Length: 382
Image (cartoon, rainbow, N blue to C red; front, side):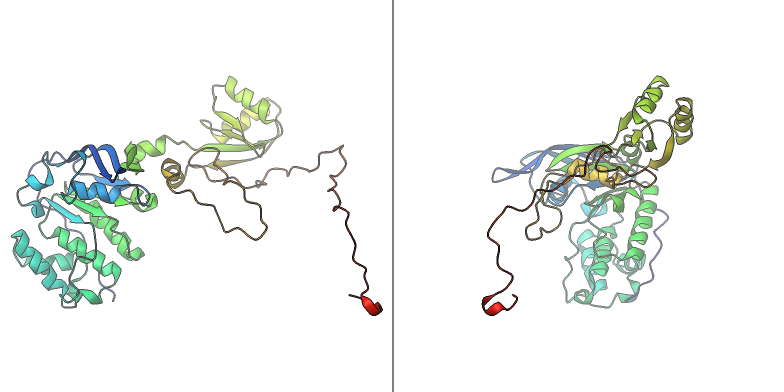
């Protein structure tokens, strides 16, 4: 089924500036295992906040406590300054998608939404209008049991939008969507937030969220590891210039004398410089009679930053061991956020092994042992 995606609405009704979502010291313990531990963060009004963390980091448990579905062991989760259970007409304040499997498989998409219209006390005419909004108007009479995962995701989003809420709380909403559907969802949420509404969207994939989120909350093992704007996270890890040259130590000293103090010699012999452009580095190298073989500007990869912040819950060996293969611990990145270096690097003269003046390394011969005769009984070669 190919549905024509609808455009996001130009405006949703907003009754004054809401104070947003606040999580204060939220903790949930199951049989002495802390799923969420003393978690505090805020979701600014009118923003798209990405709630990020690996699977099992406590995101869904936090959202369920926010929506009153799980009682916290300690702490508070507030919407408009009050717990979810204290909201008047909560379906018209918060729209939530925690599971795309909530529709009865024998109901049609239209019937499913009409039932929710009655529960939320909203006009039944909004059912068809909301199906058109999410691109399911052409399949309104089809049973939901025949829907693909992506169609069920959009139906769940339509259910959350029935009451025209000020807040959307979405748990992994892009699961099952094709690239066109993901692009539509991104544009829809951006339009929804531009109208003064607020989105809290969870995901375990930073690349999926950073294109639309202007605020990030990153958790790992149930605790907060980062909160701030996407720009703040990007600015915390600046780009660096990798310089292959004849004398890295001398060039590093010249850079330090010029005020560029963040220069480190890498394992492959190149100099990693932060805070200087390639042209300035080349000029200083020329003054010091240091030959530059090549430079490469390496931009920070936020996905690697995210992985470095949240790694460690489940340690697994990279690859599958081959019979008799010796296993080594996984190589760590020299700096979080930068891609793993390859050896040798392009543009850099390859190192020579062994070093000049030393004889080539000889591997010890196999231990002596009994030798089988080349011929078997009767003089036949084996």
